[in-house]
Length: 264
Image 1 (cartoon, rainbow, N blue to C red):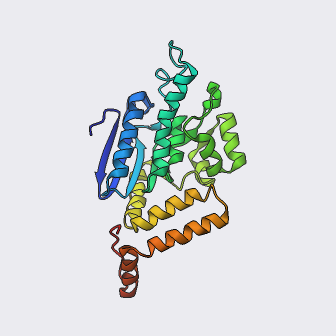
Image 2 (cartoon, rainbow, N blue to C red):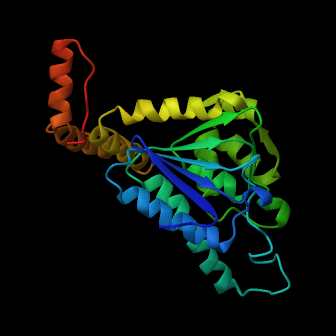
Image 3 (tube, helix red, strand yellow):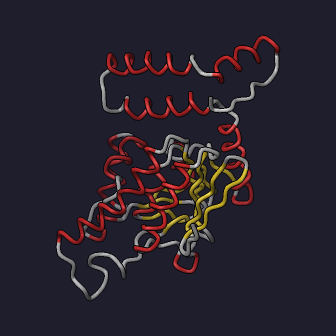
């Protein structure tokens, strides 16, 4: 499928999805929403892809909504039901990133604002450059995050910091984001792509079935008690240890070589 507001490049089991409106700092318009939903479905269903990377073209990751297209931004006033319909469409992107069975990495190259925060935080991991910074900013527009921010912020930052970020709309610089765990890794801008791809390639070399099960159970564990999580782990472990990849890992260990996982 061809896209106009994003690009999708696949190589060596990695799919790189790039928000591609650099002249608008990758602001999200309805076309981009539709294309992202389609692209994430495409990547999720591609059995050759093991890791997905989300990034932005130019000097920004994403500057938020293109306000001229969304509720309150133009002369046309939308009804609450129309706004809710728009928001639900955007929510499909955050859900797709988190529910994708493959690991997702946000490669954060610059400003990450508004809904851009929600998308970056919806990814499993984030690698950022020193040019990166985050700001929710919805409160300054008399609004709240619609694509998961109220769920993501407190889980990534802790309750107090997450609520401060949500209530004030203040900016979170890259160094602070790394210190509190929002960024997994902070690197110079010139090293951002290399460092992100190195992380992605490490994940590509891992056992896809075990990683898929681990991701699913890690997120489910946020919603259940320990006893339920342990029962889920027992079932998942039984599945993982029945795979060819597990047998390959055991054989490679005995032979003192690196395992070659195939996702079976």
